[in-house]
View 1 (cartoon, each protein chain N blue to C red):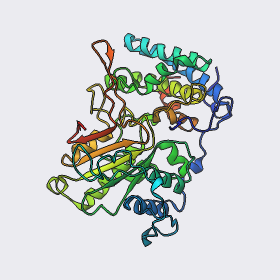
View 2: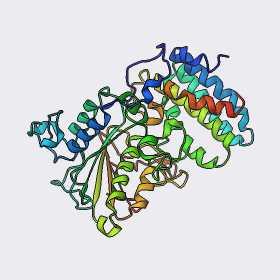
View 3: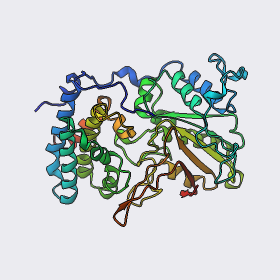
View 4: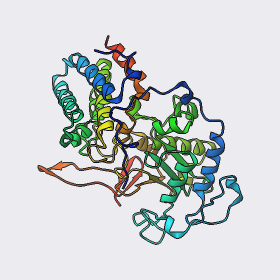
Length: 138
Length: 268
């Protein structure tokens, strides 16, 4: 597995794969919230599929970043994780990975309009997530 | 129709993190800001094209075709409140984009005008965090302080420092300076236009529709100024996407114009 020092020099597809790896590695830290863990694992699996070209699942991936039904996105989980810093770190790493994949795959998915949480998921904000990963010992 | 995935397919492109210079505001940002605050405040159809001096009341030169007010369907008054519709037009957002030298399809950009006494001659604009880096504008922490009263409840950089947070803090700063009471603000409006056809994100709209979200910047602002009416429109689409499942069916309860008063959504 690459590390954060390599991140700036990777191409964006490799960066996306790295972020997905980090998010997967962090997921066991959510063992105390199995229901959320399963949902986030599903979103990460969706991101993997979209990154491999299955854009039919793009809408589901997008939902994790901004759910028009307002029931199942990362902001809802954040509310439910209040005060649980490790859980929030896992959630944010997953949201960054999924947003990053959605951003670079949006053209292949037909250029849908995107929420800022996807548009802004670019390499320039990686430092924050490197720190979040560090809080989990990653 | 907007396309948010700017810059085309970026797959395979090498992408470095931001350079340190992106944290340094450009020398002339305050000049550009001053120009835009004056430009946005001008009545529609009389926008100045003189980029060198915004205060000279430059000649009206934009043709009527360039001004399309997305919510102006009632002769300049908003149907729900019968208050004047001050919503900035597409040309206004285009001017913000041009003045900040932002790419033509990147989002999010917002502009606002208000009827609040003392602020009628001032317009407001805001851009999302990534665009602020591109435009080399100061970050919100530098502009309004880290402990600003209107702040995204989410520390994730994907979900904070959005255009809405920028504009509402700028307005709040001016309102604090003016010291107006709730009675003074009664009946006044702030009209906002944002550049994306999928409208306000769930972080910024938090607390308006679902208890499952922390209060976002719109609700925070509205609760601070309960007698003000905040109306938000989105270029080419709904200001708020909301499609809940009711009795097993997806129901479209999206809002063309998001109207908020006293921290609550108001029906059109």
